[in-house]
Length: 403
Image (cartoon, rainbow, N blue to C red; front, side, top):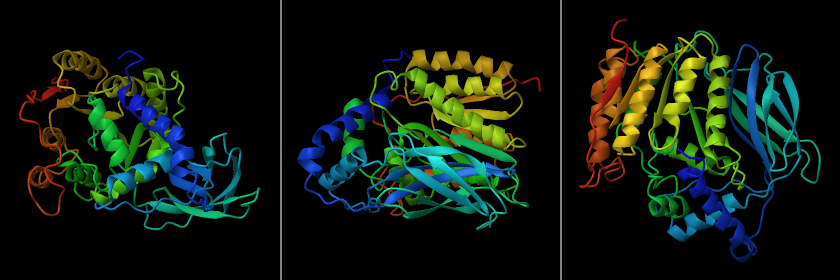
């Protein structure tokens, strides 16, 4: 995809540019209440933890409701666009007995590795993290968070690294007007998952034995401003929680290029795989942007680690499908498999056949897919239902049949 055609980044850029232009007219009269530090879910192992967070003067937005009016959702999005960062803030973070001082960048973001000394586990998987501002008028303001840091006997055998937009969450980035309307006027309650995703991801979490506790990591080029929307969406839809790694989107054209999209995802994948070295990984993405190319590189870079690559076919372009099939040959040559699937159930069938999920989990994926596509009152109405003019493409599985 040419660098000028990164649709989701361009859409988000447009929305946030509107937010910046409207801040004086819409938000200037609204009171701001100091909050300070936001901690995003981190992760780590073997005595160190990746910390991610942001120093802000804004209080967190309230949780979304399905009944929220479009104008209220727009105001919330404008607030995200106009986040009042504390540039170069000094933040002290504590994990167990370890302490580390971070300096935020000019947008208030801070991240990096720190020691984890005797952290107290919440449930065998997560450890608490605390942070406080060390200077300025809001000195002493504190925040709490957590980091995925498994402790025996919780040792992941299998990792899942998943894209978000058009992989888990329907964004339809190929339809500009629909995507802008969804981002600007919707919220975490009104966003729709792809049918069967929650059941499939839970099956991957439980693994082939059905008794594992495998983690899921979410990697996206969406901006950190949308972190609360994504985390709430995962929670509302019953999709397994996990560290969400987003990007600080500068509105410059160079930052919006596909090259930066590729570099961001590649670096986040590398961080996860070099942290949990004993586990195989399943990579899940979609065909609308560069996930197949990025995952092909991961298969090469981490030989023998990538068990399978699942790509949701959302582009419906014969040319794109052929390009992905060509990439699949490279994935196979590097010792993995690629599934270009039209729906979640097709990927789940492959996972069951290869022992990545328990065979009896297939029925739960199929059941939830039907519920998502129907009128089950526990689900949003017909999420992911295809338009009558959509023509599904067949599932394409490419793997080495000689092993």
